[in-house]
Length: 203
Image (cartoon, rainbow, N blue to C red):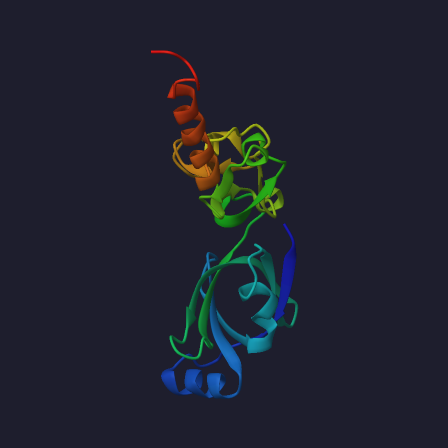
């Protein structure tokens, strides 16, 4: 999985006054959990642009100076309901020997037989939770829709790799090919035509 580096500085004070001052200065207060103790730090709001405003999943390298560096993932984010300004971010520390669970996007590959026949592809699940060691976290989960006929569904049991585990019930639908209105209408008209008596046929 691709990684983004965030350069920040540890916070000496975590009170409301200092937090407000940080935000007014264009910084975001953050907390790193998962280690022996929580690490409070801040970083410029612009540093989070490629981490927050993207559909992609990333791990994070948090550099706090004086040789302090932590590998982490984004755990939670608080955003202002009106301005969409980032108010606070929680991170969770990664360790090479400990599995971690996180959401990664689904990437559709292949050309569905059902779509070629006039069906409509619907992506039911755009992100999936996966569990793996940090080194095995994927950038995305590949969903091959090639075998899907019209009306077929692709279940979560048909996606994924041995390096990671997809953390969803087996009946979770990732994608499906629905019968389009045009295809349904054509099928109905064909059925009517088959039932109608041939022209000129005597009763």
